[in-house]
Image 1 (cartoon, helix red, strand yellow):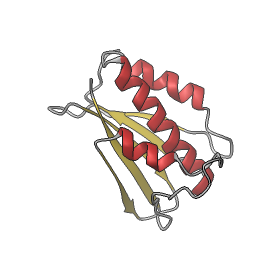
Image 2 (image 1 turned 60 degrees about the vertical axis):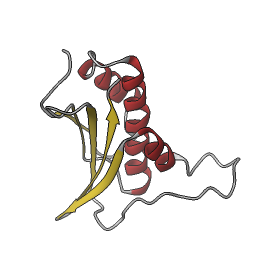
Image 3 (image 1 turned 180 degrees about the horizontal axis):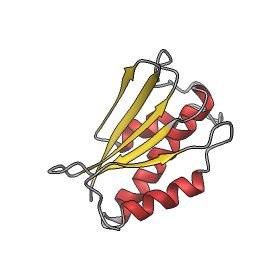
Length: 131
């Protein structure tokens, strides 16, 4: 399929854990013309954002991915329906804990990330450099 200059949308079934393997395969199909490092970084970053929405915001409403025209980034957007719950970087106090690294990974992998809110939804987005 190649690099998509238009937004591609993955819609999640409600009430179940997100199918992360399917999400990663979906991303690989849509980003087949970017480098393997970009695809791997996008898969990791997207998995973290989707998992955070599932665990902390009652699930994912929608996932979008695109390579905006004229820019050398992959943009990932994850929607949920908890606009008041805004993500923040967690400072790890217990290095043996399996939790608390997600947004640190997002911050490390992305060139930029942020949160947009609207009536009844929140979008956490991040941009990954294309290599």
